[in-house]
Structure formats: C-alpha cells, structure tokens
Length: 443
Image 1 (cartoon, rainbow, N blue to C red):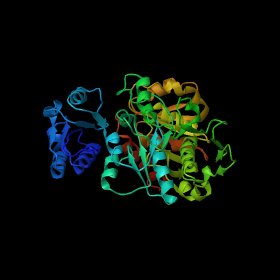
Image 2: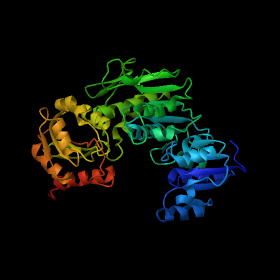
Image 3: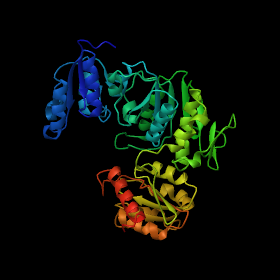
Image 4: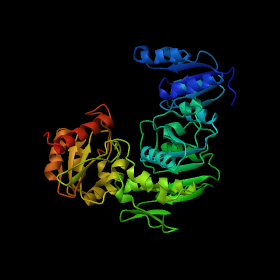
C-alpha cells in the first residue's frame, strides 16, 4: 500500500490511534489526528502527538472533517455508526480500522483469535507456547499492544498472535489469518450493537477472507459455513477433535493425552483455552510432549480465574473479569468441586434467572454484592442459599465462614463493577487483598 504524499486522518487519540499515526508517518503520509474528547482531558495526548509530529484536533473542532482525506483510519473504540465516523467516511476515499491498516503493511503470518470470553488468555497462552517452541512470536491487538506498533517496529517475527474484538473486526476488509480461532459466542456489548445478530456479524468478519486456511472452533459452534479446514474442541462434547476427561485433554483421532489438571490454569473453560492452543500446535507440527512445561506453568492474565490462595483447605479463584452472564456461566460450568460463589455488581439489566439451573447444580452457597444483589437472590431463590454482603471484604469473610475443605470460592461477578469500583481490575484487587489478608493472618 503506497502512502507517500497521501492525506490520512486518524480518528481516536488512544494507543491504537497513536500507533496508526506513527505507522502512516513512517510510510510518508501526511497525517492529522482527531478526537472529540475535551481538550483539557486530552492535554497529555496533545503533547504526545506534538512530539510525534501530526496535529491532534480535539473537542468540537474534531467533529467535522476540514477537507477530503485519501484514507481514514478508525480506532476500535469509535463506532462506525457514530456521526463523526460517518462524516469522515463521506469525506474520504476509504475508511478502515487500525487492524486492517497494519495488516496491509505486514507480511508476517497471523494467528487471529476472537470470542466473547477466553480470547485474552488463549492469545497469551498461544504466544507463550510458540515462544517455548523456539518461534519468535508476539501478542498484539486487543490484548494491549497495537498491531500497528508491532508492524512499525520493523522487528521480524515468525508469528503475530492477534486478539481481535468485535470492534476491531467491524472494519477489516482483507485481513486473512493463517489460523483463525473462534473461542465461543454469547450476547455482549449490547450498548454498541442494536441486536445480537449485529454483534455476531461483527465477530464473523474474522472469516471473510479466510479461504482454505485453518479454523479452530468450539464444537458446539462449528456449524459455520466456511471453506476452511476445521478443527474442533470442547470440554463438554464427546465428538470434538479435542476433548476433556478426568483432568486430561484428549485427541480423539490419535489418542494423545495432555495432563491439564497438573497445570496452573483451572476449570473446564480454561481446558478449552488449552485445547485451542494445542490445536494450533498441531497445525504447526509441534509435539504436545514438548509443550507440557510451558503450558502447565502458564498463568492466566490477572482477574481471569486466577488462583489467589488456599485458605482453610478451600481454593480461592479471582475471576473479576467476569462482566457478563456468559463468562459467569463458563466459570461455573468449568469447576469440578462444590462452589461458594461471590457474584453481583452493577445492575445493567442482566437476567440471572438464565443461570438458575446451572447455579442449582454447581453452587452450594452464593454471596450477593452490589446493586444487583437482590435480583440475584430472587432469581435463584429455592435452588441456592443466597447471602448478602456489604462489600467484597464482607463477601470474603462470609465465604470463609461457609466454605468447607475442598470447596472452590469463586469470585465471578457476572456483571460490571461500576457501582462499586472504577473497573474489574480494581474489583479483583479488592478480592485478592481480602483473601490474602486472611491467608497471611492479617485479619
């Protein structure tokens, strides 16, 4: 893609926007950056872009394109349906997202991973697995490091492992991963999409240009009509190519076994993350036996069913990243021991009655917190004893009183945290602190 002398507009002054602007400048383009945020809140970004070179236009002045651009690069946080995006699209030759923009300047093969839940853990796990096998691999995309930054660095890699959100996939027009991984799908981001079908369609863009490459997909969702060679996995099916039994991952065709339960990752949903990684390993000709140490020692990114401590012979897991019902469902279904569940948070219209039957099977006691505490207790009345707690510390104290040796105390709220915290990270840190204070005798 030739950019020399081209006029490029970058919408969004965050990390993706900065990386896209830097990449465009390195290819000889004339770049302007626009962000509708208030100038006083973007002072640091203004200084950062000033040092880079392109001007950053903020606030009301950013809402109207000053002239026609050859190309508009959209940051993933900006909805293509927003008036600012529509106006810039109308005043440009083409509008694409930062992921598509970076793809056009790279010849490094990509493993692309999407899904409603599990994609961050799986992206990091596949990257760690490839590195342990001797490949130069790096994780990028929604996992934190912008794809454009990796491409612009000039560093050579054997593989780029891209975590791809629905927001990032909305605006691809040619991205074609060598291996595509579809973890799962459930309703989410309904504040961005008008319907569940719209959300699914955004995710499905991952396959638009897949051709005859490889698709790794959860067995329960493999009825997608695609030309790609398909490898299936599931911890809940006996007919998937990779399955799960008694703590081991099984390869149906060859009879190979992987000792999952001996590793740091816990739960059947994490077993599925490992299955996806092993399916990628098979596609690259890697032997499972050579990957045992790297996978067993891998720890999930923070707040994703991470082990916190054992307290009175009960295991405490921090799954604060659980901000929707599907993630809570996965965390519950993935446990093999009785669960003391801590759930709740902001009331964003979720119906916990959808998980009533699962909760009745998996949860011995539930401790409800936050705005939605009463709704959870009402939804699960008669199937799970529910207790209210004033805050996370009170919830941990209650869980300790209720837990028995061998139980799992699972902090998986199932909704967002903004009624009590700035985000799921702060919420998870509060849970960690409450558990560790008790584990080390501080309470």
